[in-house]
Length: 190
Length: 201
Image (tube, rainbow over all chains, first blue to last red):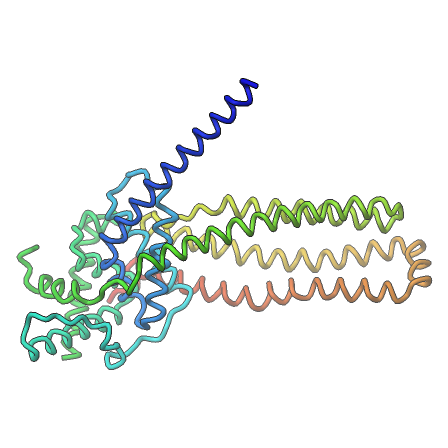
């Protein structure tokens, strides 16, 4: 009888530990989504031009983060962890389905944010510049896109190197070349 | 921020490019719940199918004919193989998503190559199985022939069922899945070349 109740107690204890661990994971996940949600959306923008597919991609990235979160042991920063997963998921998306490049005119206006502060002309010019930047980024090869996006997200060379698995020197050299390529594309489209 | 004005301007434009989709968190939570339900249901169905096949095998064994024994053995092997495959897939739930891009792409390349190899092998195994069955039938024709003459319709049904079971394996493996995987392999190679700087001008 005592043995049976001890087994039940142990089982209840185990269930409580698992439940606590799950709640902690859910909290961490919710925080990551609110902290990096916008960054993930921007990143998805560089991999997918079609809005409905992009929304799907954003959800898939979030799902991949959730699946990997239980195995996250803090061997890199949380930021690196999130960007690694997001980019790897983006790469899989591109690898399995490489959509035709969407021209500038087709970028939906609804996805362009409305900034209430600047004057209307200024706002239009700004939106146009954003669209040109996005289109130029989307025209780059996928790994170059990945690197410039990480740089635009404000990651240091060391962090980019950690996300991509290459050396810091390599990041510096490549970024210079990618920036030049991006500037050329933007120049062509002015 | 850096003193690099060009990069700062791009960052400024970039940071307001997109907002998370509406009700992003709720949709993700719903998707997680859906996936968990699918996972539980999938495992439940596997257990039910496994038990069902074992019960069917025991039933066939008790038919006490050589056909019954053959069916029971075949079903047991099928049940063991499919359950082992399911467990293997379950173990493969580990996804290398949190690795660096280079490690991820290298592993992806290895996996796609292995899958293509596996598809080729499965086609050969499938053809080998047909040849083995034909040889076995020829070797035991003295016994089987009598049964064929006695129940010709039943044997036609068995042959048609076997052909129908083989056809999707060969067609699916040889044509559709292999073509898809080869296309994926090309894309992975392209990404690897980009990473090695081969496509950089």
